[in-house]
Length: 161
Image 1 (spheres, rainbow, N blue to C red):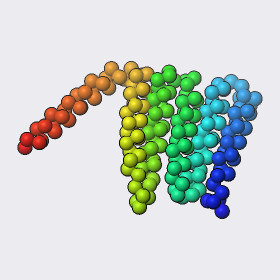
Image 2: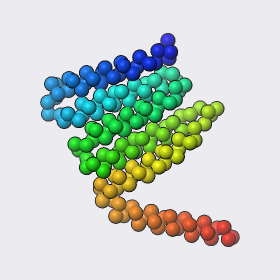
Image 3: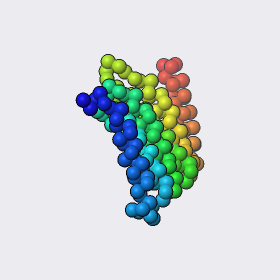
Image 4: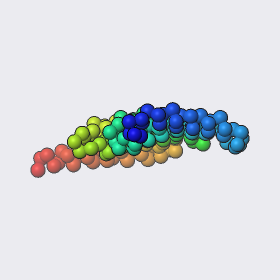
């Protein structure tokens, strides 16, 4: 059955990605070369997502390399469009979504709440990189300091009551 032959999805999607990498410059010469490389990496990542889907979540680990490769594909593909920091931020945000999905899609009998920790760290880092690239950091840092200070004041006052 397809669920037992999941390994064949990796070379299958990889070959499709390789075909896109080779064929895109001939078919669409105006496209940047990075897009073909991004599609190639994305197709390899998609093979792991397909493994997760075909096995109905039994091979949950496949989400991690799938998301990691999708994040690299996003970084490579967006580099010609976005400034370096913004592309790195998007990569981190895709990785954050990957780990959040690992936690959210876990069956109740096998909770994987640990995955929320790297998801949160990567999300914060991604937002900071995007903020640095878009000059939002000038507003984000003071807002974070105000919220953090407010939280500690609230916590201190609540503990005394």
